[in-house]
Amino acid sequence: MRQISAVQFVDLLAVVLKAQPPEPWSGAADWTFYITSRLRDLAARADAHLCASTLGVLVGKERQEHQRREYVFDFTIFTEWNDYSLPAVVIEHENQWTEAAFMFDMWKLMIGHAPLRVMFGYANTPAAADHLIARLREHAHQSSWTAPSGVEDLVLVGHGGMDPIKDWRVVRRHGVEWRLVSVGLAGSGETLRGSSS
Image 1 (cartoon, rainbow, N blue to C red):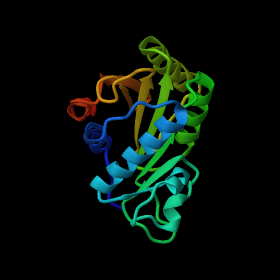
Image 2 (cartoon, rainbow, N blue to C red):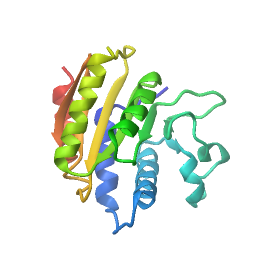
Image 3 (spheres, helix red, strand yellow):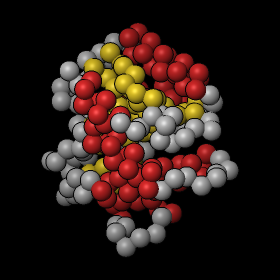
Image 4 (cartoon, rainbow, N blue to C red):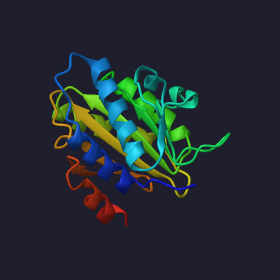
C-alpha cells in the first residue's frame, strides 16, 4: 500500500485550504461540510480517495457507493481500493468543541491502525486550544498510550474565528510525547520534516 506521510498530509491540507478558503458559515454542520470537501480534494491530489458518510451530500462523477460509507472512523483515505483494502489514513473530526468529545474521538483514533492517524478538534479560543493540547498530553501520559511501530499520529486543533491556514495548532506524536510543532499550516510540512528525529 502506498502511504501518505504526516508531512504530505499537512502540505496537501495547506494547498487545498488555500485553494478554497471557507465562506462565511453559520455553524458546525457548514464547517464539517467544508472540511469534508477539502479532505476529498486532499485525497484527489494524493491520487487516493476519501470515504465518509458525509460524502453522500456531495455530487460528483467519481462518487462510488463505498465512498459514501463510514468505516469505523469519520474519514478514511485509501490509496488503493480492493475488497478489504486497508486505509492509508484514518481521520476523526470532532466538531463539538468540548474536551470530553475530543478525547473520546482521540481515544477511538488511538485504537485504530493505519500508517497515518489524524485528529481534528476545536476549542473556543486560542488559549482553549492550547489547553486542549495540554489535556491531550496529560491523558496520553496517564493512560500510557502507545502506538504500533511505523504509525504516525497528527493532531490539528483549531478555534473559533480562526484563519484555516494560520491558526491550526499542529501536534505530532514522537514516541510517547505529543509535541506542538507549529501554529499554522504554512511551512508546517517543513517543520514536521525537521521534527521527525
